[in-house]
Image 1 (cartoon, rainbow, N blue to C red):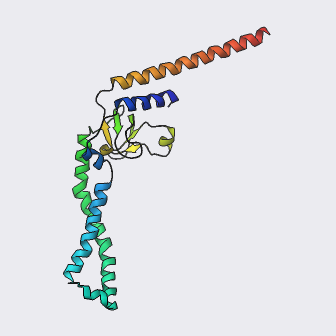
Image 2: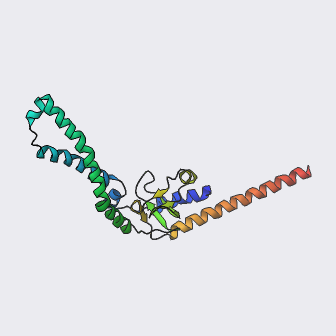
Image 3: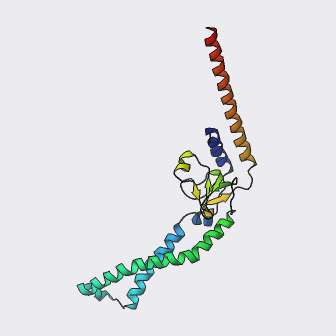
Length: 197
């Protein structure tokens, strides 16, 4: 990808960026999954303590205190795995629904705005399909080489009106061709002047 195309993408991204809703921004991250698993991590020890009828007196005797620590150490990972397992059934459909709301499924050539991650707010084009419903978005050679341009549908927002974006990219490409042509003409002129000397 040429530098003119990258510049066009940045310019178009600034001019065509849209403001996603709070719900769209939340599901563009993994925070719903983190909160869900954290709730289960807290709920599991509480259930164990309530079921075992743990009282404050436990913490004044070292044997009962050691037993409480063991129950806490065992119940925390169990709660996490239960939360992660149930998230696959309950939260995955919500992420898919949010991706559909954002305009998925996306195809090669679609113009999208990134609403999650470090590239949030940029507008670019989809240039390749990836695993599952994820796609790769044209951000640059560095991002392409390290696969940091892969996004799931919930992290993207379809840009409906791409007329201005196409004009910007076309003008940038035309400018790049003109500069290369002028550079070629300058090289030919230099060769001619050296031949005359």
